Image 1 (tube, helix red, strand yellow):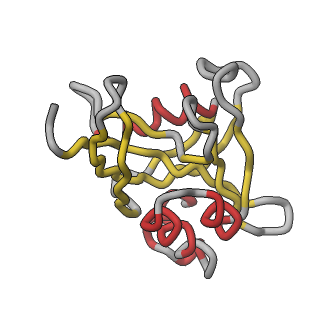
Image 2 (spheres, rainbow, N blue to C red):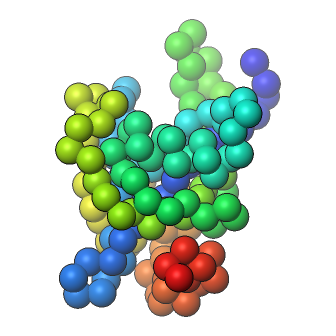
Amino acid sequence: MPSLGEQIAALPMQWDKTGKLRVLMVTSRDTGRWVMPKGWEMDGKKPWAAAEIEALEEAGAKGHVGRKEIGIYHYPKRLEDGAELRCRVRVYPMIVEKLSRDWKERKQRKRKWFTPKAAAKRVDEPELSDLLMTLCDAPHEMPLISALMS
């Protein structure tokens, strides 16, 4: 096992009817804490394409994923043997166009829309919380997000 695990994540988001940004979070399968759809990099797939697959499998979210990461965070992943692996997660922004009612991990996870601030309070990882807080002020003006909207 490498000393640093490389993972990718999608940050699914959309604007509600009042024009406020919402982010879609899912519960982890093991502890039930709120996380973003994420997973290991996939052989033969670009990282943003792997993030798109994770969003579909874990949250039933379909849409446009940006090709540039919006941020990075680290967390300790507990492995099956009880050991911990420090993981670096590259986060790709995703504008959600559709949520499937029937998706691969629907029986193992809950999903819910949050404001970025509410999501930031619910995650355990300080760097992820900081990343979510950057979305509180004028997210539509952030180049990586505005590029997805056009």
